[in-house]
Image 1 (cartoon, one colour):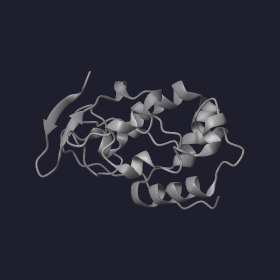
Image 2 (cartoon, rainbow, N blue to C red):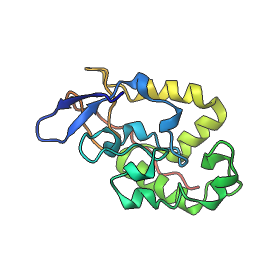
Image 3 (tube, helix red, strand yellow):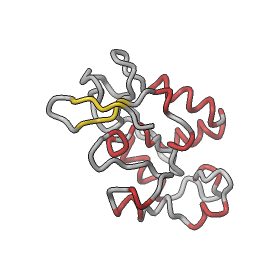
Image 4 (cartoon, rainbow, N blue to C red):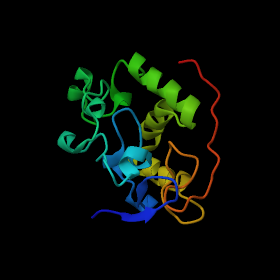
Length: 163
């Protein structure tokens, strides 16, 4: 079932995803919640998420992702980088630094929460953290306004941690 589409002025058409639709399938090996990504939320060139079918991905860079295609992940039952002996590797550190700096989200922190709390509790926290207070839709990690209703919000800032 596809989410409802809303037109937001001066932006792409986005799916109206409810936080209750965030699930474990949307958590990428690197710890990214794909349900918060603008590529997943947009209607045109919709991405099915990192765990989705590669043939449906609009970007070849997503298909060729070095993290998702890491040889070490093939032997890890959970499919998550946090369970790798080399965690956090250089790739994870790089994406974590970029997302902390630009978007106020940490992949390493997400993975550590999954490891300590379990996936179900992590998902519940994500549903609360990323819910728009105005419309109940999912906030996009890449934007500073709700993709469903346009309400502006402030991202959490992170101090840079050395890893």
